[in-house]
Image (cartoon, rainbow, N blue to C red; front, top):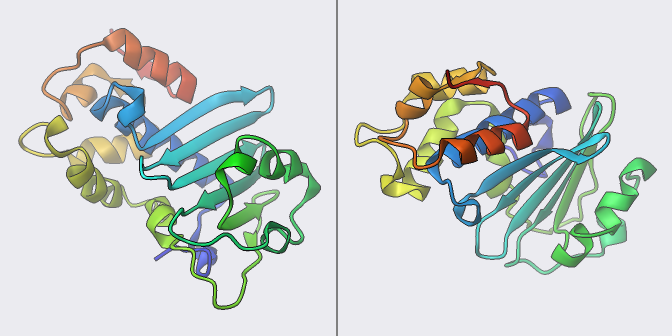
Length: 211
Protein backbone atom coordinates (compact mmCIF):
# COMPACT_ATOMS: atom_id res chain seq x y z
CA UNK A 1 0.00 0.00 0.00
CA UNK A 2 1.05 3.59 -0.59
CA UNK A 3 2.20 5.39 2.54
CA UNK A 4 4.66 8.08 3.61
CA UNK A 5 7.15 5.24 4.07
CA UNK A 6 6.28 3.58 0.77
CA UNK A 7 5.93 6.81 -1.20
CA UNK A 8 7.71 5.59 -4.34
CA UNK A 9 4.38 4.04 -5.36
CA UNK A 10 2.80 7.48 -5.69
CA UNK A 11 2.05 8.49 -9.30
CA UNK A 12 3.69 11.60 -10.76
CA UNK A 13 2.06 15.00 -10.23
CA UNK A 14 0.16 14.96 -13.53
CA UNK A 15 -1.35 11.53 -12.91
CA UNK A 16 -2.07 12.39 -9.29
CA UNK A 17 -3.98 15.49 -10.37
CA UNK A 18 -6.20 13.44 -12.70
CA UNK A 19 -6.95 10.95 -9.90
CA UNK A 20 -7.80 13.76 -7.49
CA UNK A 21 -10.22 15.25 -10.01
CA UNK A 22 -11.81 11.87 -10.76
CA UNK A 23 -12.56 10.98 -7.15
CA UNK A 24 -13.82 14.51 -6.46
CA UNK A 25 -16.24 14.24 -9.40
CA UNK A 26 -17.49 10.89 -8.16
CA UNK A 27 -18.02 12.33 -4.67
CA UNK A 28 -19.92 15.27 -6.19
CA UNK A 29 -22.27 12.82 -7.93
CA UNK A 30 -22.77 10.62 -4.88
CA UNK A 31 -23.25 13.56 -2.49
CA UNK A 32 -24.56 16.85 -3.80
CA UNK A 33 -24.21 18.29 -0.29
CA UNK A 34 -20.59 19.45 -0.05
CA UNK A 35 -20.26 18.95 3.70
CA UNK A 36 -20.85 15.21 3.34
CA UNK A 37 -18.22 14.69 0.67
CA UNK A 38 -14.86 13.11 1.45
CA UNK A 39 -12.95 14.51 -1.53
CA UNK A 40 -13.13 17.94 -3.20
CA UNK A 41 -11.08 19.82 -5.79
CA UNK A 42 -10.66 23.49 -6.74
CA UNK A 43 -8.86 24.18 -10.02
CA UNK A 44 -8.68 27.93 -9.29
CA UNK A 45 -7.20 27.93 -5.80
CA UNK A 46 -5.04 30.82 -7.05
CA UNK A 47 -3.85 32.10 -10.43
CA UNK A 48 -1.38 29.26 -10.89
CA UNK A 49 -2.39 26.72 -8.25
CA UNK A 50 -4.98 23.99 -7.85
CA UNK A 51 -6.09 22.43 -4.59
CA UNK A 52 -7.40 19.04 -3.45
CA UNK A 53 -8.79 18.22 -0.03
CA UNK A 54 -9.71 15.06 1.81
CA UNK A 55 -11.58 15.29 5.11
CA UNK A 56 -13.23 12.41 6.95
CA UNK A 57 -15.36 14.37 9.42
CA UNK A 58 -13.40 12.95 12.35
CA UNK A 59 -10.52 15.41 12.28
CA UNK A 60 -8.28 13.73 9.73
CA UNK A 61 -7.42 15.81 6.67
CA UNK A 62 -5.17 15.73 3.62
CA UNK A 63 -4.47 18.87 1.58
CA UNK A 64 -2.70 18.72 -1.79
CA UNK A 65 -1.41 21.73 -3.71
CA UNK A 66 -0.65 21.54 -7.44
CA UNK A 67 1.45 24.24 -9.07
CA UNK A 68 2.34 23.51 -12.71
CA UNK A 69 4.42 20.32 -12.45
CA UNK A 70 5.06 20.73 -8.73
CA UNK A 71 3.01 19.18 -5.95
CA UNK A 72 3.02 18.98 -2.16
CA UNK A 73 0.87 16.79 0.10
CA UNK A 74 0.12 17.66 3.72
CA UNK A 75 -1.51 15.01 5.86
CA UNK A 76 -2.88 15.26 9.37
CA UNK A 77 -4.06 12.27 11.42
CA UNK A 78 -5.53 13.50 14.67
CA UNK A 79 -4.94 10.23 16.53
CA UNK A 80 -1.19 10.72 16.33
CA UNK A 81 0.99 13.16 18.20
CA UNK A 82 2.48 15.79 15.93
CA UNK A 83 6.23 15.70 15.55
CA UNK A 84 8.58 18.61 14.97
CA UNK A 85 7.26 20.21 11.77
CA UNK A 86 10.66 21.61 10.83
CA UNK A 87 12.04 18.08 10.86
CA UNK A 88 9.08 16.68 8.92
CA UNK A 89 9.62 19.29 6.21
CA UNK A 90 13.42 19.30 6.12
CA UNK A 91 14.62 20.08 2.56
CA UNK A 92 11.13 21.16 1.50
CA UNK A 93 11.50 23.44 -1.56
CA UNK A 94 10.83 27.06 -0.66
CA UNK A 95 8.06 27.28 -3.27
CA UNK A 96 5.88 25.25 -0.88
CA UNK A 97 6.63 27.26 2.28
CA UNK A 98 3.64 29.59 2.04
CA UNK A 99 1.27 26.66 1.72
CA UNK A 100 2.79 24.34 4.32
CA UNK A 101 3.50 27.01 6.94
CA UNK A 102 0.51 29.25 6.16
CA UNK A 103 -3.23 28.78 6.47
CA UNK A 104 -5.18 26.56 6.50
CA UNK A 105 -2.39 23.96 6.84
CA UNK A 106 -0.83 25.61 9.89
CA UNK A 107 -4.07 25.46 11.88
CA UNK A 108 -4.89 21.91 10.78
CA UNK A 109 -1.50 20.39 11.56
CA UNK A 110 1.00 18.08 9.86
CA UNK A 111 1.78 14.44 10.57
CA UNK A 112 3.26 13.69 7.14
CA UNK A 113 4.43 15.73 4.18
CA UNK A 114 5.52 14.69 0.68
CA UNK A 115 6.53 16.74 -2.32
CA UNK A 116 7.70 16.53 -5.91
CA UNK A 117 8.97 19.11 -8.37
CA UNK A 118 9.09 18.84 -12.14
CA UNK A 119 7.23 15.51 -12.08
CA UNK A 120 10.33 13.76 -10.78
CA UNK A 121 10.72 11.59 -7.70
CA UNK A 122 8.70 12.18 -4.56
CA UNK A 123 10.49 13.27 -1.40
CA UNK A 124 9.68 13.22 2.29
CA UNK A 125 11.40 13.46 5.65
CA UNK A 126 10.69 10.48 7.86
CA UNK A 127 11.10 10.48 11.62
CA UNK A 128 12.31 7.16 12.97
CA UNK A 129 9.73 5.04 14.79
CA UNK A 130 6.98 7.54 14.05
CA UNK A 131 3.62 6.16 12.92
CA UNK A 132 1.42 8.44 10.81
CA UNK A 133 -1.32 6.14 9.42
CA UNK A 134 -0.70 7.78 6.03
CA UNK A 135 -1.64 4.65 4.08
CA UNK A 136 -5.29 5.20 5.05
CA UNK A 137 -5.22 8.49 3.12
CA UNK A 138 -2.70 7.88 0.37
CA UNK A 139 -3.76 4.49 -0.96
CA UNK A 140 -6.67 6.04 -2.87
CA UNK A 141 -3.98 7.38 -5.21
CA UNK A 142 -3.06 3.94 -6.55
CA UNK A 143 -4.87 4.76 -9.81
CA UNK A 144 -7.16 1.74 -9.61
CA UNK A 145 -10.86 2.65 -10.09
CA UNK A 146 -11.84 -0.40 -8.03
CA UNK A 147 -10.07 1.10 -5.02
CA UNK A 148 -12.46 4.05 -5.10
CA UNK A 149 -15.49 1.82 -5.68
CA UNK A 150 -14.62 -0.39 -2.70
CA UNK A 151 -14.24 2.65 -0.45
CA UNK A 152 -17.30 4.57 -1.73
CA UNK A 153 -19.56 1.52 -1.57
CA UNK A 154 -19.13 1.52 2.19
CA UNK A 155 -18.85 5.27 2.77
CA UNK A 156 -21.86 6.40 0.74
CA UNK A 157 -23.94 3.30 1.47
CA UNK A 158 -27.30 3.66 -0.34
CA UNK A 159 -26.51 6.85 -2.30
CA UNK A 160 -25.90 4.88 -5.49
CA UNK A 161 -27.98 2.53 -7.63
CA UNK A 162 -28.97 -0.79 -6.11
CA UNK A 163 -26.79 -2.55 -8.68
CA UNK A 164 -23.73 -0.77 -7.26
CA UNK A 165 -21.23 1.78 -8.55
CA UNK A 166 -20.37 0.63 -12.11
CA UNK A 167 -16.71 -0.02 -12.79
CA UNK A 168 -17.10 0.95 -16.46
CA UNK A 169 -18.25 4.48 -15.59
CA UNK A 170 -15.59 4.99 -12.95
CA UNK A 171 -12.94 3.84 -15.45
CA UNK A 172 -14.18 6.45 -17.94
CA UNK A 173 -13.95 9.21 -15.34
CA UNK A 174 -10.47 8.08 -14.28
CA UNK A 175 -9.52 8.21 -17.97
CA UNK A 176 -10.75 11.81 -18.23
CA UNK A 177 -13.68 11.22 -20.57
CA UNK A 178 -16.25 14.04 -20.68
CA UNK A 179 -19.02 13.41 -18.18
CA UNK A 180 -22.49 12.79 -19.65
CA UNK A 181 -25.94 12.48 -18.11
CA UNK A 182 -25.95 8.78 -18.96
CA UNK A 183 -22.71 8.31 -17.02
CA UNK A 184 -24.14 10.13 -14.02
CA UNK A 185 -27.37 8.12 -14.14
CA UNK A 186 -25.42 4.88 -14.29
CA UNK A 187 -24.20 5.73 -10.78
CA UNK A 188 -27.33 7.23 -9.17
CA UNK A 189 -31.03 6.68 -9.87
CA UNK A 190 -31.64 10.41 -10.11
CA UNK A 191 -29.79 13.67 -9.54
CA UNK A 192 -31.59 16.37 -7.62
CA UNK A 193 -29.68 19.38 -8.94
CA UNK A 194 -27.92 19.27 -12.32
CA UNK A 195 -26.94 22.94 -12.05
CA UNK A 196 -25.11 22.17 -8.82
CA UNK A 197 -23.20 19.36 -10.51
CA UNK A 198 -22.27 21.70 -13.38
CA UNK A 199 -20.95 24.23 -10.87
CA UNK A 200 -18.94 21.48 -9.17
CA UNK A 201 -17.49 20.31 -12.49
CA UNK A 202 -16.44 23.86 -13.36
CA UNK A 203 -14.76 24.23 -9.98
CA UNK A 204 -12.98 20.91 -10.45
CA UNK A 205 -12.06 21.77 -14.03
CA UNK A 206 -13.51 18.72 -15.74
CA UNK A 207 -15.26 18.55 -19.12
CA UNK A 208 -18.90 17.51 -19.44
CA UNK A 209 -21.72 17.39 -21.96
CA UNK A 210 -25.22 17.30 -20.53
CA UNK A 211 -27.06 18.04 -23.79
